[in-house]
Length: 267
Image 1 (cartoon, one colour):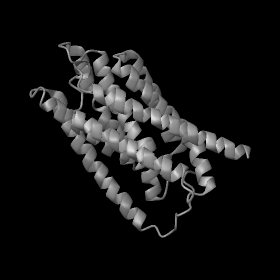
Image 2 (cartoon, helix red, strand yellow):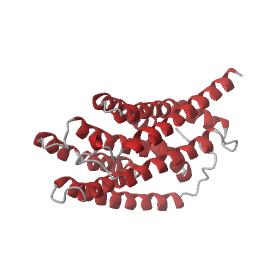
Image 3 (cartoon, helix red, strand yellow):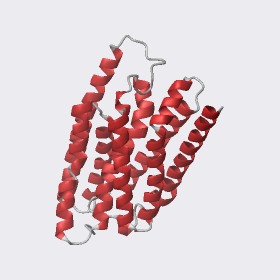
């Protein structure tokens, strides 16, 4: 009974944290994307950012309903997912909510610290619990992509954007803009490292979409600038290599004959 009560309580906390994340995204982040204080040479377009978060939140809703509240998922898999993923997913959602709040209130130092803490939380989930190692492709898409892949991609992008806003790179100060033009390449280096060492295309595909939004956002703002050129190069490279890796993974999965219907979600 105590175990069931703990499982139920964990599901409630996860769901509440998700609702907070949805609220923060829809009522604090998206309505303020075009405010002048947040428009830097490294800001993306409203449409791309909105699509990214709508898709991410929908995929996370699928994760919650299909893994945590699905009677077809074995109790052991549910318990494993909640024990391993639950604390990190809950923490990520809560930190995202507070980031949306403080960012919309122009408290950029606090919001940058929250992003860095959340990045460390997501990297801990990534490297310690290895959701990338989930064998079944449908389970991988249901668990790893929305819980680890897209949130990690957003943190990489948001740290750059928030930092550019914090150091006023939208003004004519040269040094912050030069630094941001260097740090923009973390959107290429980190996803490619994960692709090479872990064959994880989710972060690369997500960052390619965010970089594409950044490129379009800046191309129509200032034609003669490095950041939109860098953004398009990063978007194209990440997308190409990620799609190639995705197809290789799909082919390898189709050649696997062992049934994974009730295989453990996480090792």
